Length: 138
Image (cartoon, rainbow, N blue to C red; front, side, top):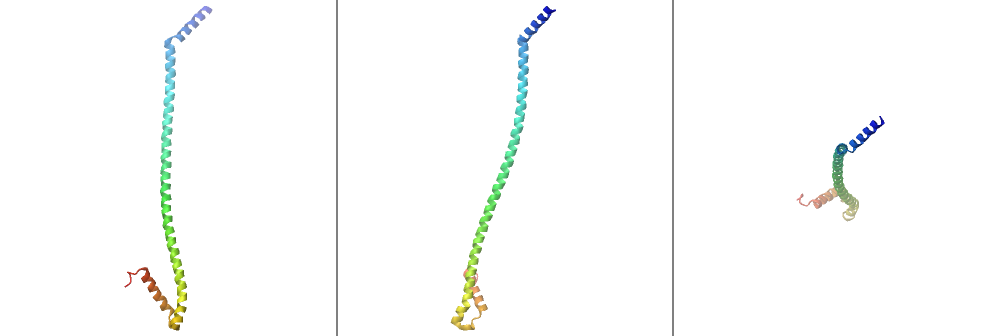
C-alpha cells in the first residue's frame, strides 16, 4: 500500500511537472489577469466619461458666470456714466438756483421793483433751453 501511494505521488509529481499542465495553468492565469485588466479598463472608461461630463458642466457654468460678470460690468459702467451725468445736472441746477435767487435782487437794484420774478424765471428758462439746444428754437 505504501509503495502504491509512493508510485501515485511520483506520478502526480511528474504530471505536475509536465509542460502541458504547467502551460494550462499559465494560460488560465493569463486569462484571469486579462479579464481583470479588461474590467479595470471598462471602469476607467466609465470614470473618464463621467469626468468629461463633469468638466463640461463646470466649463459651461464658468462660461455663464463670465458672461454674467461681463454684463454686470457693462451695466455698472452705464450706471456710473448716468450717475456722473446726474451729478453734473445737479451741480448745474444748484448753480442755476443760486443764480435765480440772486437775479431778482440784482435786477431790482438795476431796474427797480418793476421786475416780475416769474417772468424773469421764464426768460432764463428760454435762454437755458436755447443754450442747451440752439437748433431747436429759432
